[in-house]
Image (cartoon, rainbow, N blue to C red):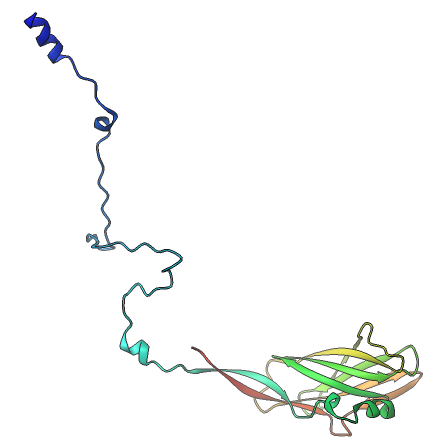
Length: 202
């Protein structure tokens, strides 16, 4: 019996799954191979935090410098704001209503007297004092007719190389019934000036 017991003691014992897989230890290190003291978990709640823990005095004392962009501003009063606008349209047959700038693009609305059904409306403009000029078509604004007048919309793309202080000048031409009518702001033309617009980068 003793011999049998000794043989049983020498028989390999069943091992648990934990014993079969050795435990692994994970260590975090920085780029130099040094052991990290702590690990910060980034979550949506703290993702905007400053991970450095503090800001230098230089960044706190830094003054934001303005960024400059070239823009255009009208050198005329928007005709639609004047009390005599409706009378001006009926007397002169055509009149600029308003003009709006978006960077180097200008959109204008024109109001014309409804003389005949067929109409042609264009805007003539220059950026070099009329040494050169271009004409752009104006499109009819849907459902803008009130029986007596119609509205047209045009768009001017201004060259990017216009210098600060440079001017855009334009006038409106209206053709209908074999006749031609102009709105040139009473022989002064409509004018817009290029200027520097400053934005502070915070």
